[in-house]
Amino acid sequence: MEDLLKVAVMVFIVVAAVWEFASGRDRGGKRTKQDWQMAFLATFMMAVVQRPVLAIVVSVMLSGVFPNSAGSLAWLQEEYFWFALIGYFCIEEFLHGSSHLFAHMKRPKNKTLQWIQAFYKMSHRPHHLSGGQDNKGQLTVTQTFINGWAWWFILPNFWFQITCLYLGLTEVFIIATVFKGLWSAHTHVNWNYDLYFLNHKYKWVRNTMWALCHVICFPTQHHQHHSRGKNSAKNVTATLAIYDWLIFKTLVIETTKPEIYGWRQSDDEANSVLKRYFNTNVKKYMPGR
Image (cartoon, one colour):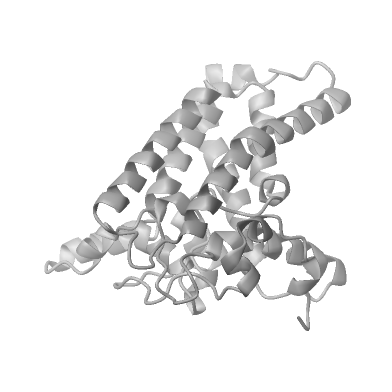
């Protein structure tokens, strides 16, 4: 079943990537050779190394601390499926949004937290590098799974996912992860259909879309997160914008797409995919650097 999950998300990404290519939305510096290489490398590492290693680590830890716990919560999805699914999705998205926000927020005063945040920043930075150094880069669907080598091991929502799967919430895990994977991929595609509704000639259409943007994250909202400027620390959730609105206070709704995508790159990041992905220079993200 987990293989079906991977196939569903990857098929969407491939179809969207082909559409971007056929429509010319990745040409003219919008996507570089390095962007393609990073997409293949990060996706391969996620599927072949990171997820399997994390699954093994979680299974060994839980079986050691709680013997015979495998499948122990299967009854929960059998008797209360929809409650389990909604609860799982809300918890997973909150864990993702809060840890993602931690990687973007101002440096904490505590020295230990500064080091932890620096590691988060180092690991997440590749996700915000797109195009070359000519500022022509734009967001594309292949950016969906791009992060540094450690990202999968340090986000609590990934640990939560595997833990629930180990405890027997198989169907809940599959349905929630497929939906989130597809929705996250769709917000990375180089399109901005939500702007049509946000700028519609009828006020009731604009207001309806404006209200929906407070609950669900749409493409342009996430594109703003990938912009260079004040909005790059906004809209940190993948699906539930209501957390950005009511809890994180990071919700931003714009009626135009970003002028510049992606953060400024060093020469090493622009020219070496391996240095971009396997970066270990945590000190670079500490105060004074």
